[in-house]
Image (cartoon, rainbow, N blue to C red; front, side, top):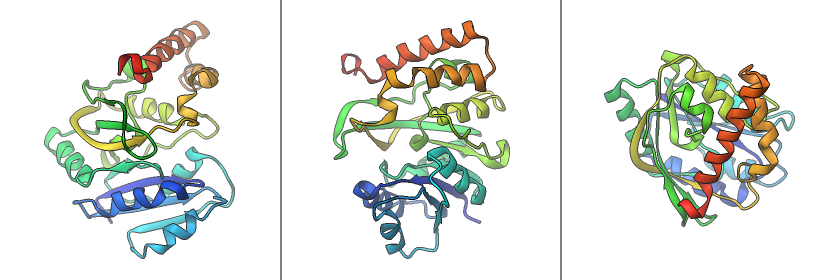
Length: 250
């Protein structure tokens, strides 16, 4: 068994996939397995993955297009690593990402950790200020804004178990982190920039006004909050999202 399992959903990702693959193969820490689930891509993503003959890369081809949460869950089912981490097929890790994260988790006795990441354009050039890992994350403060990004986080599955994603929600990552933080007191920040997040103009996560309802349902349906409480946290999330991405504040 590998010490760390990397979970990746892939859907029509051929434009950036080689960069992502290179960033994993270049890791200084080499005891990993990378489980990529292709979600019925219509481009040549599967062909690109298959070009890399590395026994640590495990390709799953989904029988149907089920979305990123479903693809991640298929990968999670196969994962055997003590540590679980995530990397989308268009994002990028610095060569020392795994080494630094695992060392930090061991030294801090952490069940969950996250690092600073750069927010870049499609060419991986800085676009707005880095998103800083600057506070300990708890269930309570994660309700108001999702500070945990999949590409910059890691958890210990031996201690907390595997946490799967709800399928059908466009905010599946936020729900997953909230459910995980119900089990543990906090996630710890590693104040080093170890990853690069591509900010696409058409990214679903950037269209805040289009997913207000989905965010409301995070609280109403998945956390079982009252309507008033759900509206309160949705308003907080919207304000913090504006602060997080607006160039006025970055």
